[in-house]
Length: 286
Image 1 (cartoon, helix red, strand yellow):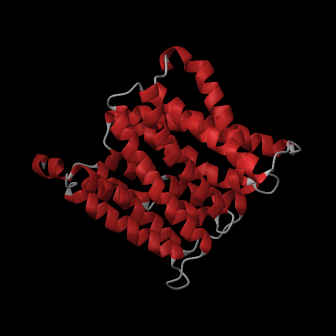
Image 2: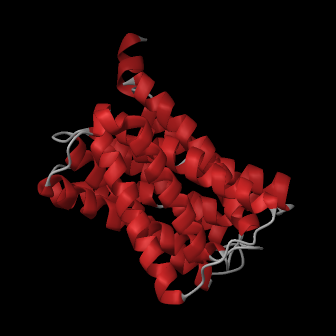
């Protein structure tokens, strides 16, 4: 379990960097084409590297993978579109709201009430996110609204991964979700008629990072790690991507980190510690 948690922490750190990478990439590439390159490359590489472990794909496998893939695609569509209208550091914190949505969805679907510490962590996370997004009053921008919608889909994605990974080849599930995203991205490019290849080298570096590191490595690692931990636990750890996104946004995009943002990030860190540490165990031991 600890190895799975550490793997998810690495994923959160690498995902934090995607906000900066995508923001820069939008200077020379449109969203449908960026998603197409990202998922076509990721799914192709994964099949070439793990085709033996993926094995034969049945119609039932395709149905399960399609559910996870469609949810993941919608999450990326909304979050990347939202990034066009908001700051990378701000969006990083806002999308972490899925940490609150996951336990609630789990409760609704499985009729299993999460532990009290998950609610405490969720409340701290909500307050921390509020400090980031509502700094100038109780108004949410268009980009923030799209990001909140993406958070719902990412929460659904975590739940669906946990549901299908228990009784399905995890390599097959990881590949199918990328493959479905690739198909949907290609359809979107054809529909919008925005296909071109004249990019600067920096954009190709961004594409490589997004497809190989942020997609192939990170989502494969998440899918495998969630086989050994629960969805609420995973969502808390991966919400740390918001902290990494804020730091990298300041360093590389010259975004401003205000005192409320600092305190909001601190609250999210506290939420992670509350979930991760078995406080009752330490009290009894003491």
